[in-house]
Amino acid sequence: MRKFLLAATMAALMSTGAYAAVEPKAVVKTYADVAQAGYEDALTTARDLQKSIADLLAKPSPATLKTARDAWILARIPYQQTEAYRFGNPIVDDWEGRVNAWPLDEGMIDYVDASYGTDSDANAYYVVNVIANKNLSVGGKKVDASDITTTLLRDVLHEADGNEANVSSGYHAIEFLLWGQDLNGTGPASADRSGTPQERHAGNRPHTDYDTANCTGGNCERRGQYLKVATDLLIADLEEMVANWQAQGDARKAMQEDPKAGLTAMLTGLGSLSYGELAGERIKLGLMLHDPEEEHDCFSDNTHNSHFYDQVGMMNVYQGQYKRVDGSVVKGASLSDLVKARDPRLDAEMQEKLDATFKAMQAMKHRAETVETYDQMIAQGNEQGNAIVQAVIDGLVAQTRSIERVIAALELGNIELEGSDSLDQPDAVFK
Image (tube, rainbow, N blue to C red; front, top):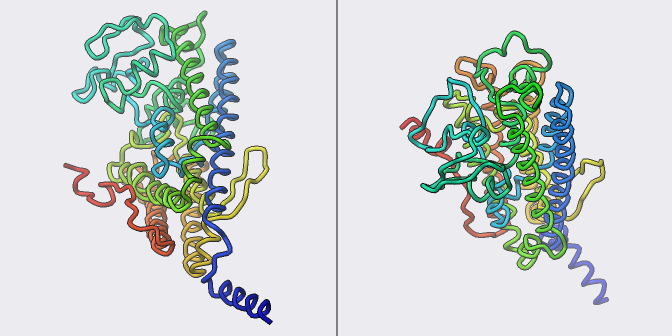
């Protein structure tokens, strides 16, 4: 009789949501498993990129350059999905600037168009052109740059003088070296370009910039050396982060030591990426200014994909699953399960908001691939393009409000999410 009463009581508790069948520690474990898989995929695709770059440098041609560019775009897909792990995880945040810092002052790395200018009050290294100069002055000290090494890029040049625009390594330095500057602005692409809207409107660096026998742009050997070293650094950085999420890795251990702190990290990452970083700094700011320099993957015109896969990454975290590049799926106990046990209507709301943003992202992605690029969408006077981008912002802001309600429902206390002047104080942007 007692066994029957106990079973009935347990069933009643579960049916009302008072008893959570999913433990926070299981949710946190899934989160770590998804992180490990995502960073492993980012490393795998970066190694594919490394191989294609080696082929480009060995035999520069339009075909090998295109293959390297395609590999870079594919490498961004798993990496962007890991951005949901920023903000709540100090290990990731401290590391992220090495691999995904933007925007960058590309004149520090290589030659630029005359329209770029010759100096900047904000950056002494604005047009230093490391590739063209074997002797540099950094921080008042002479630097021998005759050999382009990992030490030169990482320890000497990256964020030189504490300026975040001095980006010497990572995805975007590699992107610039593969595409060159995008000089199309928000207007139409050059008349002699062909291919998809993205291909027509992106940078147009020729393969001969790496052809030492028929060199354009000067310093082709050093340019190739820089590209190789930057790619080697990216591989090393991703190897480091993969190790951090393995069974005894520091990031995984930090998450699993305290499941409540783990949940806090998860939701800090979701809310901050959704609101301040993505809706604000990466999208709304560029739309307000109608400025193509404010797009995330500006040299390749791949920004629509970067934004889209950030959203996919946030959905991965909430739903506790990730589809790997080989087609297999990592799946387990999720935030959704935990919220559903507390408040099924809130979970349904959260899922609805995530899906609405996803559909807005799909519309933006489709337009970028068939009609016009992202930087054209944010152009002044482009009412339809602006509306497509604004719908993405609206979706991200709305899903952040639901994330805040999830934080309250799980009783995680006062979590401070990243903000953005473009959303919180838009007048300040123009001061």
